[in-house]
Length: 134
View 1 (cartoon, rainbow, N blue to C red):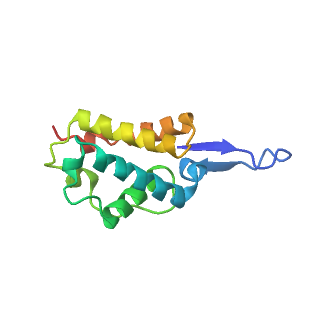
View 2 (spheres, rainbow, N blue to C red):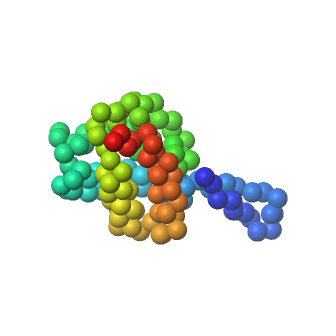
């Protein structure tokens, strides 16, 4: 999903697409969001049991790269298939909704404007079918 802007008002023919990834601040902002998001997941009594060993660096990198690609970033996700990684975990719609709420709260904590955060949540909502297993 991209937003189109005109970098030079005197030259409207030169149009530049700005990805959500760039709009939120690129990789550093995404890494900060993933860190805050993981802290919230681990603190939630309903969701923490899905992460008995915590959320390691490798998982965080996968998550940052996966989300970055979904938001228009330059890196391509090459980790495990999302559906296969969540298969057998008995993730419900309620779990998915709690997770999305934590992501939204994390984005709010980081000062992401509500309209942009809603767009991000809309993109993540597209993962429901791959992640929910019950």
